Amino acid sequence: MKHLPHNIYVFIACLLLCVSRLSVAASADQEVSHLISFIKQSKATFIRNGDEHNSEEAAEHLAMKYRKAKRYAKTADDFIDNLASKSSWSGKAYTVILPDSSTLTASKWLTDELARFRAIEKPQ
Image 1 (cartoon, one colour):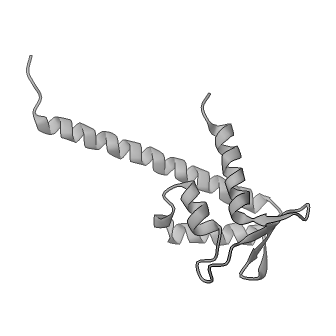
Image 2 (spheres, rainbow, N blue to C red):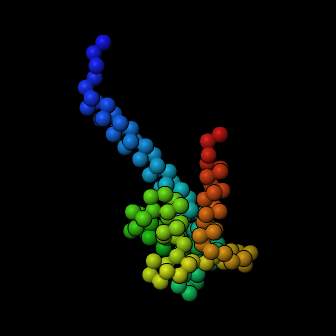
Image 3 (spheres, rainbow, N blue to C red):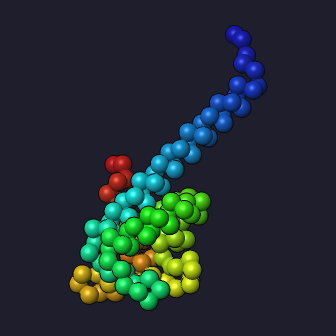
């Protein structure tokens, strides 16, 4: 039986690593896309730097932040922590007023939705 050169094992390991990275990136993109759709359809009011924005405006703004600063959002959790929870300009936390008039931080609201989404999407 002929042995394969050592380089082939290194190549296979690198290939597997690349494939696993693509899978993680696709999953993060899918989760962030879900969060942005969730925001858009929420009918919530977003308070950003003291100004009110409807859910469509908020979704557009966060989608733009994700496109421009994706390097800070390797995961959906990073997206929430680094881009969707506070203003990069002022550092002020975003707040959300839900249709039932309850108010909470964008961080809490999006983290809860991400957990709900992951529970539904998790393979059985």
